[in-house]
Image (tube, rainbow, N blue to C red):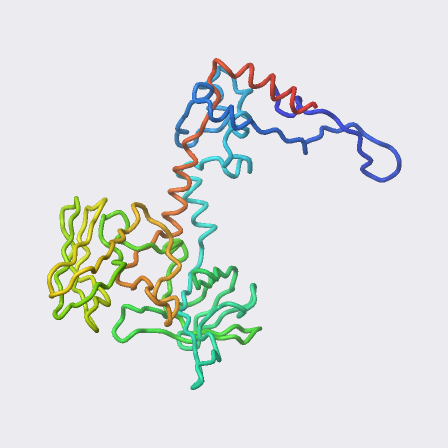
Length: 353
């Protein structure tokens, strides 16, 4: 069954002459009801093998290539058509070579204030600076390239068609950076780090995520009558217990500072004892169980409070992201062969309403 043969026809005047032609109404759209998608008996899952086309998968599952279109109907991420279908390893390699050619220049923005603490500049911020399509020049390296994209949240300039090598390495001692300038806008910023595009951070996350380590201790009650520093202990189910030290002032516990983060915990209780006082309580906050993008990396702003230190940051690169995304897309939902006939009939009926 050809997919578009199921669609109704509509009259359309292409040349605005009053002469109408019958054409297939390809703008019709039908989606399965959530109740169907939530019915586990109505569909199954299949992992697309390297290089398998939709028609091949349809042939394998249904004994005919005609039902290839049902995969695009029952998988939300496939609503964009073939461009969302999982790529073969060879296609993915070619895609990475073409799409991620060039370099990423990451900056480290800084808020500048005058003596009255009024903000006078956002130094090295790329927001509102540079024009897409202009040539970016490295004033020390002599490198140049075309600005094709800006990722504001990540403070990244994507430079392609690069000649030479831009300078930026925060791990060098001393730090190695250079001023870069837009040839048209004449905007300029200082580099922080330069990456090959595919290897640059797609997002940062705290590398302690998923380790069961303690991220924060929140003091819920300072207590009273403390004459010396009380002892802070932890009761959890992990392999390594954290350690922390309390501070006191005016007979109260004013803060609890983490010395070591521990690991392997799913629950963690805090106990404060000794010091001559009583009543101080606190609770522990663990790092999340999965990698989550952080927006408060300390090198994104010199004024970030509680920001994740660069030493605690890890990242997923653009390359890793594309491979993970392609892997996720290879796991598709399909209509159970026992229901495929009913599904096709219902689809054709709904598309012609």
